Image (cartoon, rainbow, N blue to C red; front, side, top):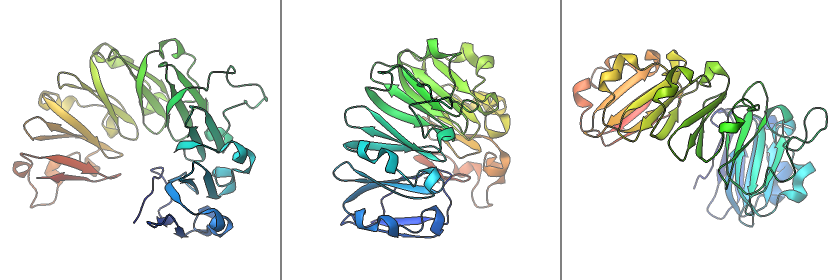
Length: 319
């Protein structure tokens, strides 16, 4: 039985298996998590496994955490081990972990630039007021930053200030947030009244100003590596970000009506309509152009589609 949750940029050479009895086996690159011998005695009763690009964190059934792999990228949690109790869920950036406790506190470790330090900045000064990182409901991440959603709808951000770890210019708008979405280096927060707040690198979807007047009555947001697509309550779609990653849907705008759900690879979007049709846009090299699909799959066959699935570069449909 394989049970894992990994950051989507993990080195594919590193694999791990958790058996039904909660024991654990790893193989692959020795320095980046393929050798778990250092933690083997602790790897019992594992509930779930998480990863950065080069380290693993295993959540045990009693709420403890066991880490191994590249030490500076999350494999060494000794400095915070006494805090890693009663853990409910673990989240990650490329090189850091953030663990959420059952009572809503947060414990971080790994590369400080990527969010591994949620207490002090480079000068040793506190990042937040004492009670800011409390009552956390869920944590979201880009490659280099975390965003924690509090129970009161406010948001706390930390990590690389160049890539999403700085939000002062939108902090006043980060109120009544119900969900946060991300590209590689940008966040998009959805408010309870259906508006959208973005921050981070403009080249990765943080620059939503050109479509801001359309970002109302939003139901859900989806993303590729560098673009966002927002689905409205009435089934329309609003896109922004890098046009080569799906940020410009002008070419298919007339088809983006009565949309039921949107799916994405790292480079392109596919929208499923209420009547089972499929609309695609983004990088044509990664299946955004249905005409480029293998010969026996034609646009005619992309009718009455039940569901769409995807990995980083390929779409698959259930007919």
